[in-house]
Amino acid sequence: MAEIRKGEKIELIGEEKGKRLDVYLSERLYPLFSRNHIQQLIESGYILVSGKESKPSYKLRGGELIEITIPPPPTLEIKPEPIPINVIYEDEFLAVVEKPFGMLTHPVGNKRSGTLVNALLYRFPLSSIGFPLRPGIVHRLDRDTGGLLVVAKTDPAHIKLAKMMREREIDRRYIALVHKEVDFEEKLVDVPLMRVPHRNRIIVKRKGKEARTMLRRLKVFKGFSLLEAKLFTGRTHQIRVHCAYIGHPIVGDPLYAPRHSYPPLMRESIQELGGQALYAHQLSFFHPFKDELLTLRSPLPLSFQKLLKYIETL
Image 1: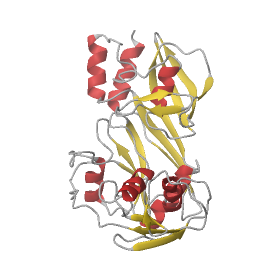
Image 2: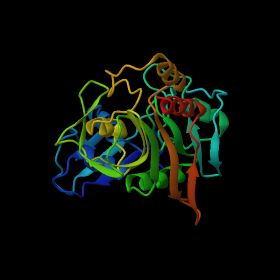
Image 3: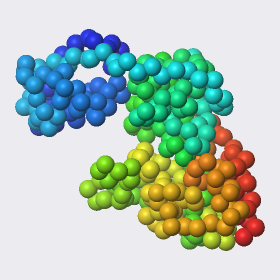
Image 4: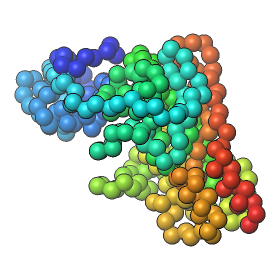
């Protein structure tokens, strides 16, 4: 996909008969525009089908001329901020960085400062894809999850990395401290997930989107277990929901383990951690422009290690 400039006009021929207009365009224009963005453009009249305004749900008949006018970006200025960020790997195309617990990956709503994007903009240039709120952001971590993220510094790198992510060519692994002692060495959790409308909550639902997580036992404590989680899909809150679904919610998770009470010292350790006990500790992928396999790891933060030491004393 060639670089698309804001304000230009794009013409496509609807080639997939019976497919929804928003689905077809989000697939053709990925990762430049999300399906949600495409729906907004359709509803605002920026996308015409055979010269007429349409709806996101319009089913293609095949052969229609689809005209897309890319509107100018909103006047939202995201300022670079000198926030310390640990960079694990960097070259002219991409970087792998550590996102601290409690930090938003990118600006959301009225939150325009203190995010990872603010810190990255101060450190190095980012791709324009995702502008203005998410430049360079190939994938995200929940605010209260810490760990490794790959970010794109150029548009071609962003497009390739997004394709690799979509085709599951980037191996992402997490460390999770969960409630109760697990009785398995490895377990594949393969249950679909769906977002609850108008709520920041995900549930297991048969009609939801495919979601698969491999859990591997690392260590068992009295009343707790330490797991490694490997993602095969990347749904919102996936590991958190899957762990809760099998009866082992993540320690400190305010959404999916809300009824658990902790001893004072443990509660202090969780507060010091700044989020639930879930950390993205490893990324492995072939560099999109070099014949090189990158396997990047990050040790658990000291606050996470302190929590584990406390658990060992129980």
